[in-house]
Image 1: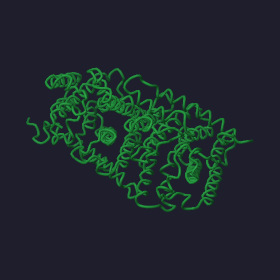
Image 2: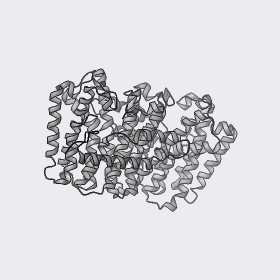
Image 3: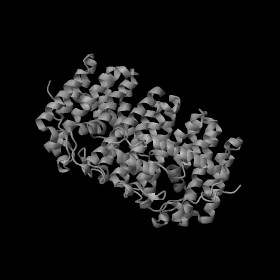
Length: 305
Length: 305
């Protein structure tokens, strides 16, 4: 089959990614309904950041992982949207002048550019809360024990032992000088890996899979998390700003070590391919119900944005 | 009995407040143990903001409200500490240059002054996560349904329909001009009231009190929340920076309407006293198990910091 000429996605993945994108947008549209009072700007800022952009990689992963266990698509989407809330909040705060100071995100002005810094800080903080509101809500129809486990795991993945901890490591590395391979791997496992891993782990939690049976899915998630980051480094390295929808070449500019700067472009590409192969091997016992996860793994290193 | 000469607290409240302060500090000390890697600065920033400061008004309220239902002190303290995480995170973000731009908090340099802005943003974000980690943790020994209800209510109280929503209203009011009494009451009910209300509501959730029986406790919390804010306005108006431990006179400087600017100092004091009286009336059916809540209500308007 031919890849979609616009997105570069294989057709079976392109149609599912498009559906997930629409469904997540529809959920955000409900969650972020303009209240019609002095908080309108806050909600407009959240809508600006959350609706109609991004690859929706994390909700897509959750939907794909839920396929393995025949978990309802609506349940997967709610959880995926909660994860996307965390992802979007982190992008808003990351782009702030005191952080990465970026003007462009997903091809649009960043939230503090389109609104103002104060509104951007609050919009990030609010999406952070909404993630947990969505998971804790009785309307999810998850059992309370599942809701509590999802929340505990998501808070861990986004906090100091996950995403935010990785961001701190990144900040300190800028000051203390380039990292080695081990340190960069650890940093990326926290900074981008933890949330990607949770996107898959969430399906295991919803399926009430015993701890011992979760190992292959964690292996899959860890491998594609690293492959995803290497691909990101390659995109940043390539310098195609238009395709990326954000400023590129930042890492080299900041003198930061990346997988690409440490291994070289060719070895990084090979490493990413190997990680994808290993990710797919973790799904060996599954049939076609794992095809979407396999397609995502292959796409992760082929994408150009 | 005589009031404590240093804190101005009546002795029975002074000793309980001191104990809660120590217990919350001890919990923070464990939760924020320095990891010994490139995240150390992040943890030091969180410790700077969270440990050894503040009135611990919210955890004290949770402990006092748990007294009503004979709920274990340890359970109350864990939940109170989660609430304090949210309170401290909001102070860190509030003090940022793009927000209130404050240098002094609880008599110490604000987090972005003691560290840097980027670390302060991340430290706030992480305390935000830790609040939910603490509540979701199985080690709380709360039933999953109680954990899920606590989390849903806390996320609501801190997000766009609570604290952060109130902050946005405050920001917009600065630009659009002074508010009237109704608008200020609504703003304060969100900005400071929602979290104070949750501090009491949490006890009702842990006690599995049916919805219909929660009304008097919500009434108590709403009244002292407003009285607390009026007292805050009076402190800001009085201009005693040393006692307050933070910059004062900010509202007048910013041309903001407050309860004091709208009602005048005397009427504001009377209004606060009336709210306290009403708060105490809501506890009429309780005996001495409500004495601590009564003492807090009285203290709320007597404090000078």
